[in-house]
Image 1: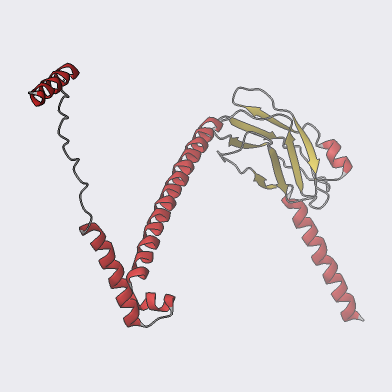
Image 2 (image 1 turned 180 degrees about the horizontal axis):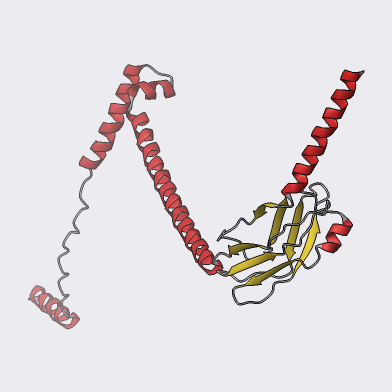
Length: 249
């Protein structure tokens, strides 16, 4: 019994010492998104996440921490936001900005040292989170440049494919000619012997070359002699009358 009692007392002492150690550590901001000094935050639809080492979601804690954080730009203007708490992760606080930020601008989130956890511990000291938004204009120019390069690449691939298609057509045509002049393939297509195929191919070649050689030039038009003019009718009558007078004598 004494041994069992000693073990219980020792266990209680360990638990109490552990609790005092945790309580003495206090509330800490252990992480954030964006992180400290991050310079490429998207200006639109910004949400800042803060991660602590203790639970922060109790209703009393939410009321106590109201207006304990402020966000300002480099121009000194305050950016409004809405605070959200995560039911699954009670150590996280989300700050959803009510307006878009300005591109290429520095912003500072100030967290009061009086921010407290569900256990009542506080940060003790004020803390700041500084970040910069990215240059949206430069991003737009880069995107336009990338789109232009993509168009050029696509046009290049299209031209290359068209060139390959044309080359393939030429190869197919050359292959067709080869098939017509190859006796083995010709014999296979026609179902005849190789010798007969060779003879037919040779006959087709001679026929094609002979038709070119035997082609006669067009006949030249023949010259036609001009017709002789007829004798006038009056002269013919005189000649006939003269002949008649001779016969009478």
